[in-house]
Image (cartoon, rainbow over all chains, first blue to last red):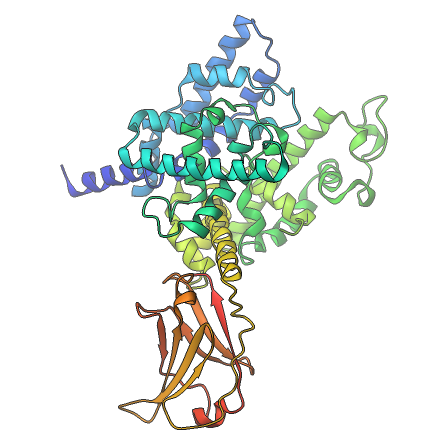
Length: 323
Length: 188
């Protein structure tokens, strides 16, 4: 085995262990990016319809192939190659995904949670489970889990003592609870060799795998949405230099056709300051001001098209600007 | 966190549509941590990855959240211990021979002449109570009431920080007769 092969194997192992979150997030981004048609199919799904089920299954396979099954490009770095190799070790199980997607309220558009967010969450849970299946539970991890569980129970007990009733269902599996666990560890056990330096998202992984309640919490309750799921969490806190992209984006808005520009103004700048969508673009019977002028689905489709065009424009402008 | 502006929300949604080809994995968490702790700045390549990769931004967001929690925990530990480093102004020295020691409840400052040169050695020593809540990675800065930093760094195994860089033209005796100090703790 060559040195390069050994290095590659080590990197793959790292992407399945220490750097697991990167692997998981990369798969999620690529999958969700290609899941528009899949979400439409599941949104229209009627329980018991075998043809629809077969179509969804085929679409899951197609998205998986596009997301992580493509041949390696020649220009990939060693790390890129390693992360996609690691991804194949935990390739989602189609039958499990099919069941999770078709029984999830948000994906089926039966709740207020955006389907993309719910899909991210489901993939996260499933991929964590796949990874744990592949690796099993080490003695160290079992001890870490025992300690995390103790801290969690203490916090929940304290909540109950303070309020006279237990926290809402799902609280144990919420980012808020994970954050409180991390804070408690930092305050009382920061020198603990097993959990003193544990990261917030590692805590979440343990609960996702080992807490029965969290494993079963497939559908998102709006109150306990993870803010980083399905949206670009980094943008709110990026260094100012990166936000230069915002200036370029403003120029891109001017390049949209008027219809899409109006949609962007209504969606992001508020209807009161945006030009109303023109009457000839309205559906009969629709109101004539702001977002209400179009059926919600039509408006959303136009918004997504505008975002897609803005992404292409921004990509070009960033390239020109050397960003 | 403050509310996002319209363009920030739009930029977030546009960037969220970017595809991920795995290049974001090149941005290591440790690098992000170093930048967030102001030990370094991003290189042009790293900034480029941040703008073009959702994975890199997710890494950034995760490390940012971890650092925020660690800062909150440090503030809490300091508060619980009853230490107020940002306002712990020492009484100015009334004069005397070197080494000069200015004590306080939580730490002391010693200034002595350098044994091998004409300069000065400033030493900050934390008391046990303070040492227990400070981690070796945390950065402490001793700042006088003119907002001039006398000393900055991480504590050694004895709970001390030494500085050989005297910031004034006057001698320490002259300066210490006029200055009070505050100790600032920066999570590291």
